[in-house]
Image (cartoon, rainbow, N blue to C red; front, side, top):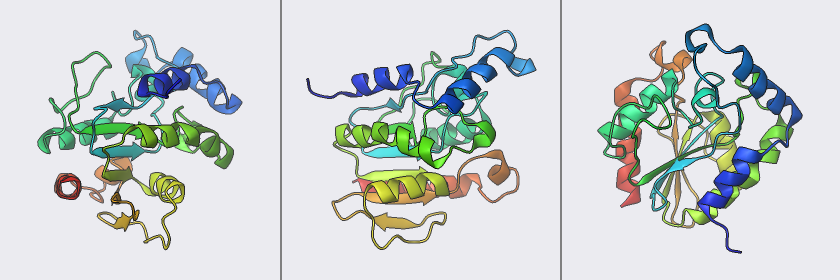
Length: 221
């Protein structure tokens, strides 16, 4: 049977390959954050989502414990997602600037969002083995998203995963706005991760994030 994004999604959601991640994501889903105590947490791996005809793929690190692990949609329900989807909306890739829940009506056009690791990891730090175990899902998504011309990587971790996966040699140093030519018509475009440690400190500003997606649109033409 031919592969499909729906098949990848189904396999991701059912995955229990990494015992440490399974235990952590399920523990968080039971103990919950006080402000979300009334909600039922997703507590499973979080698949990618977006436009199957996307020209831009955005890759993050992993779902947040009380974000994607709670809502079931990557970058949804946390501060990083607030920044990301507001920027995607300003760039014309999203129909609304917010992403609060999996059923909030958000739709992406020309963009697809995924993560290098699909389960929320303790301290937001997956192990090398966990990264490698999850990698085939991203490989399949890249194969299926045949129109992607630009891969926006959010942070050093995602850059290292994608650059190694696509065999980029030599590998340019990671930095906000840095670009790496894959050599097959695709470009890796780097951005600082929109985490609070970057946005609260001013290391990443809205104009900086907007510039990345403006450049992504140029490269995707």
